[in-house]
Image (tube, rainbow over all chains, first blue to last red):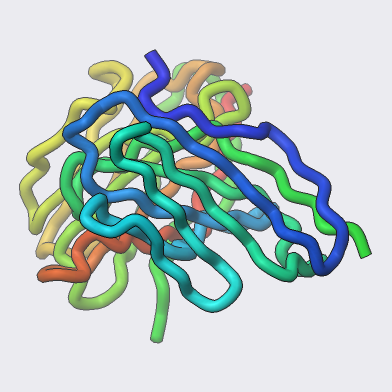
Amino acid sequence: QQQVKQSPQSLIVQKGGISIINCAYENTAFDYFPWYQQFPGKGPALLIAIRPDVSEKKEGRFTISFNKSAKQFSLHIMDSQPGDSATYFCAASKQAGTALIFGKGTTLSVSS
Amino acid sequence: GAGVSQSPSNKVTEKGKDVELRCDPISGHTALYWYRQSLGQGLEFLIYFQGNSAPDKSGLPSDRFSAERTGGSVSTLTIQRTQQEDSAVYLCASSPPGLAGGSQYFGPGTRLTVT
């Protein structure tokens, strides 16, 4: 059973556009939701994270939107740049500091 | 400051051999995690340490896999009698204590190839 479902699998966006990646979860015990960015040959890097007591969190061009009732959360990348081309993973854990359950990843390509 | 480091960066081994993978967490980070990344299975949790004890080993795929952490710092993941399905990138992460404890910082990984 896949506990965190991520879509789309791949995404192509024009430079300056908005990239949107969605995740859905089943386990209502999850209460920490980070997003990671991974470049080829590198480990995942933490981008931004949210807890379910807020519906949105913004850091620079990156925004997480969180819908607790729908058990969904999404990453929005504003003004997408070619340097944003990478694989993005959503994740969830029952408690911050415990095991992360990852989505399958989204490969983003930003065309110039 | 220095990030999480892992060694070796690449390891090629023959089926049936044992391998040891090393992780040096960020200084001062109390929690340490091992994950495995493969094309078919994505990123999978293996085990996590709080200090030197492992409260969650639920992700270890078989008894051929074991891990230890000493001095609240360096950790070693050992795979005995390696199989071809063990081929993957093994990632280590660490996180600080306190309110920031949810933030896991990953190392570059060890790419293991079993021939």
